[in-house]
Length: 249
Figure 1 (cartoon, helix red, strand yellow):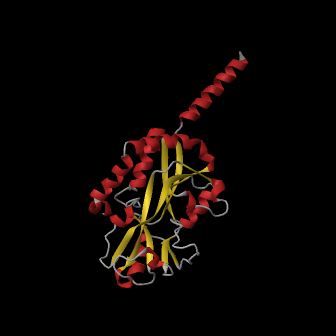
Figure 2 (tube, rainbow, N blue to C red):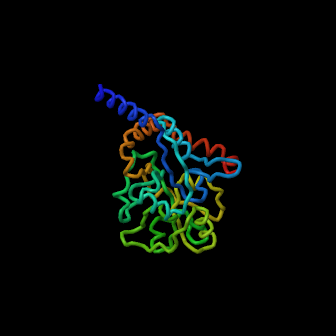
Figure 3 (cartoon, helix red, strand yellow):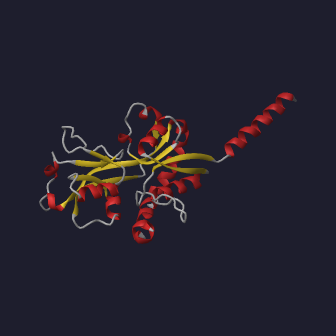
């Protein structure tokens, strides 16, 4: 009877562990990045398209998410060292520093992000050709694109923390152009002195998971396929676009 009893106990223990909800620590930069996310306030929890997408996945898979808002460099360091578990909205080509590939696994794309060049109208002719920007001074948000206008690697003069800082630098003439996701550009209240080109690049934005959670990728992919098949991801983004004024408050 003893072996049978031991097996029964082990079975109960394994079953109880399997039923426990997984809690994943999510890294997001410590600045609002609408419509992707807004930081929590005294009146509101964190919110935004990425939060809605993750919460939907969490409900379907019995996963809870703990949101941590940190500087970009620290998020990347913590992901590499398994102190964070998840980073949403990442193209796999953006995380290629030593150790990042080995530490990461990725889901299917959530969506494709088209990106436009934003520039100060006073510095360029109307509707400039893309080649016009070759040799001009770019600035970018640290960690969110690897776009180059030519095969010759251009020095990125300024790497900033937020799109809001990019707008300010463009208006002050401290850089000549910057790449913006169309979702971010269309959501922002744009100064009339700034303009944008047609899309010049696109990225497949995925959920980046710490490799220790590679076993979750098939389940994440199943729910992502469900979201994409029902067009729910676009519905989520459109909800924030429709309620732009209230979302910013």
